[in-house]
Image (cartoon, rainbow, N blue to C red; front, side, top):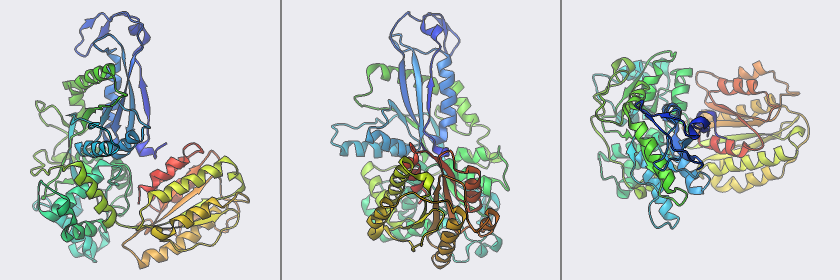
Length: 560
């Protein structure tokens, strides 16, 4: 399982059996051809697609299958579509759990990282060729229009140095005569999982060096690069696995939740079709940005045979044809086909500038990108997290075993500089220890999780309240860290002194210095209550089962 916004899905799009039997089929241009009679099985093309273009790819795949497509040898083609973040999919391919024939991440940057890791596994040749761009969308800093105007937009060209300036200013928006907006809050995805996060930190490094190409390890090691990256990352609200998360949550929660987020241009355009407290606009950093070019790479792997390559070529031709490219444009992407002019909705009425970007940055090789990720891990905003773990009697057996494995995987997903502790509860709420750096406490926390057993009731509200009080005090003393609770329960509250409404009153919906992320574990968990708690504390609520809880916990670690 994946968190809802990056859910791994399989769309088995199968041509109808009548056409497989050899009756006439209609191609993309409407010409009828006689399909050869064959008993050969269909070629199932596994396509790994980045999440931000899933709607376009899924819609196109459905239209493709309706044409009853075939390979040159006459075999029918079906599409098995897998949707996940660019980095997440690359990790699954490298682990051997995703045998994709086509990998289409958001950017060629992930092809470079995939190839470097593949060669590092002692393979003789790269796994992913350069690929052909399907559609284009520049990386932008999406900001609420009044806030952008306060910084000088549109008359002033804004960039990462402006973000650094307001991020480091202790007065926040008050320095721009808007004390009612509070501190500046930025969001971008986790660069090890998501393309927009990777390109965001790459752009930060380029801005520090004032280069446009040729970034190398020496540049990354420079004190000015570290200083700028650390300064910008201080304003992060939290990280995440999906670029769409920040667009969705910005629109849902408004400027009190997030001042700006690193998004794709198409997501700014898409925001105008949704209700919002104020419009978003796209800032194209003056220091330069990147095209998210969505390459279509047919993998050079032993599980990709001649028929899969042929099917991939047929599908690519369909995606690059004018009807599909025009549909991509309607969804806010710029066509990958340069002969198709950029038009509405890529316009000022939708918060974007079709004449931008004016300055493009070069994506370095995989070795430099790996060094960039190492630098980010050193400079990122650190987190303090309390894992609130339900050990009530209903957790006995496999549910408890898998939940322990999930919590352990969560700890493994955090960095050594992050801090954590675990609060166990049933009908009684245990003692809470202050989070300690995982560099020294990880093994002890894992041992504590491994040693618990299930018994008793479920004092959920009292457990959350106890942990929240401790973390709120820490957040007030250390505002430059991410403070959060990760709550897992398989049932409803039983026996807490607090009522739900009393618990909610402890949260400040405008500031929420302590974010709460909840996991509804199994069918007995009260999802509506957990949704309410997570929403009130500006976190996220997800669901898990014994089969998926380990992956759910791993996904949540990407928020930090």
